[in-house]
Amino acid sequence: MAVPNFPIDEAYLIGSWLESFFWGLYTLLFAMSMRTIYKKRKEGINKFTTFCLVLLYMLATGHMSLGLTRLIQGFIIYRDTIDTITYFSSVWIRVNMAKDYLYIATMFTGDLVVVWRLYVVWGKNVWYAILPFMMCVSEFVVGYGAVSQWLLPHPDGPEMVRWGTAMYVISMATNVIVTGVIAARIWYVSMRTQRVMGVESGGRYNRVIILLVESGALISATKLTEFVLYNIAPGDGVGGLNAMYIIYEIVPQMTGIVPTMIIYAVNHGYTQRDDYYTGHGTTLAFATRTEPTGHTNTSLSAVVFAPSDLDMASKNVAAEKGRAEKLSLKPSSSSSLGYEQV
Image 1 (cartoon, rainbow, N blue to C red):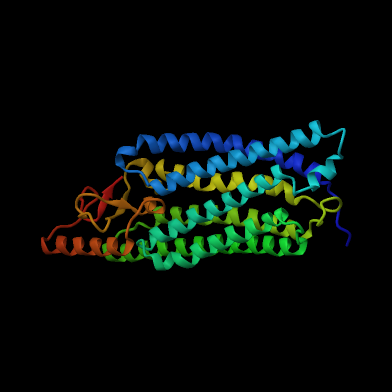
Image 2: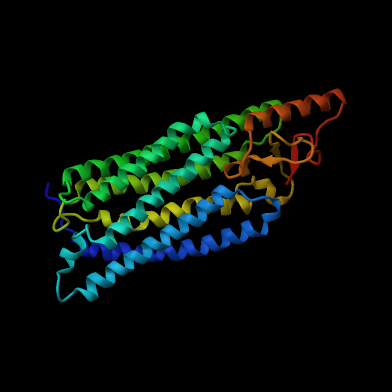
């Protein structure tokens, strides 16, 4: 079956328009999230994820700006000296290489945030994060290696394609595997704590799991679509189906929007149970390793971006329940013994 023709200049034009649209949404969401983080600064800020959110926004803004620069050059500055299709298919142009470098850095940073969540929910046990972290590093190396081929005296086209394919596959695998493990870990700990305490708390944590899985699925679907279009796109960009460049333009925005959206949702209570909004709900609280359970607690939904040792938390909850039973006390929603009033 013949592959339909979709010119590369049209693909870049449509992709850049969509990128500017998503950048506007991203800017609004980023501003609201930063405002929330600033308002809660006295409660403590996760410096790593906050730094990554700022970096992702800067990378996405830089990518969008360079995309606009390419449009101006291709359709206005060089329109009388070079054909637009020839210009946009000349991917070795330095402004396009800079744009590709920002794209790869964005993918790397976005996947690094996912790996950080894995590291946190496994009680900051580095052994669980080593392999995903190495996958992120590999993604970064092969991506930059593919683009940097254009700096060589004699670039190897087939080699660039192999390196680019490896980058897409590693990134998709990292996102899918790590998101699944995080969701499974939260579900397991919430169920175990529910059995220990004898309270119904799955509704709230199911929302956290759904939020993580759906956000991971969105990124994975975007990357999968881009990967499929990448494999059927023409090597020279002159003829054939060049729809890949539409997805390529919006990926940096989506990579930044998803983690920013999760932080905004968690900070504004959108992962709470339905009865939270009527004022009758209770939720389990998870204490950090270094703080007494009866004083400072960390909820499981905040674990997505806040450091916490879930295993120790579960043990602390069990210990508190045993202590309450010895004192013939029945924990209630207003008690600090393993509960947090919401």
